Length: 309
Image 1: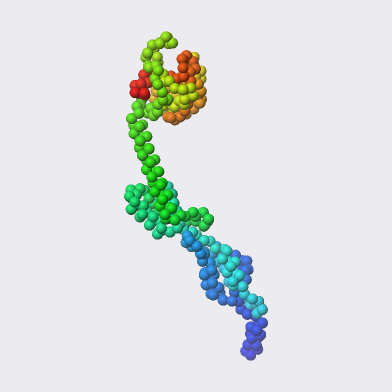
Image 2: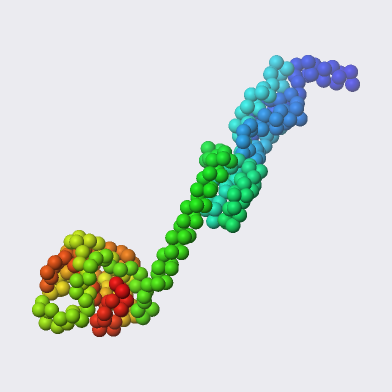
């Protein structure tokens, strides 16, 4: 027992017990007290700054008790600094959305709720406002603003939204008033101008009565298609000059004659309001104008029954 005690005493004189610290099998250094080091690690791993929600180590340190030479120094502070770089920080912030569209971002839930309350007090309680909790590990992607700036931006967005809704309402009311043929809504008039020749009139320039409506306008004036459809003709057609024909389905077809330029080709799909040609004076014409024809099941009808009333 005496000999064993002497051996232990000699060992403890030359060596000391400390913890070897490793991460993923890589030895990093030594610490004297495991519990004290863990506490220091927790304290130093805290990331200062706004929006921090959670901080965790990517990999937990591994400890192994070792007997090492007493001259070997521990390196707790160096290890804390090194392991601190191996943390994952999760940041939290809050988005304010108008009609499910994010408008502004603030730092805390309290700020978001205060902002929504202020907006409701300003008679915006009927607006679809929502708070969205967001998380990220990229702090630089967070772009928050002050409550004053956020409030101003949201109020501006709400006004824009109200204007958009009003315009949509007015457009829908306009469309509701526009006539339709065989279920096809005539959404726009092709050009603005003066009617110079009406449907059904006779003229020395024609062998028969007028099959369309002539609207005078300056050369180059854009001609818009009156409804959705498919281009069936875009070529020079005798007395019509450069002629564009559009098939709208359900037996409805519109013709646009005497154009100076044609911007579409056969087979192309067009939407009501698309510019398909430009006013001109090609073919049998005495001046720049649009010759508009509306045909139902192949028979021409008076365009003024539907447009330019």
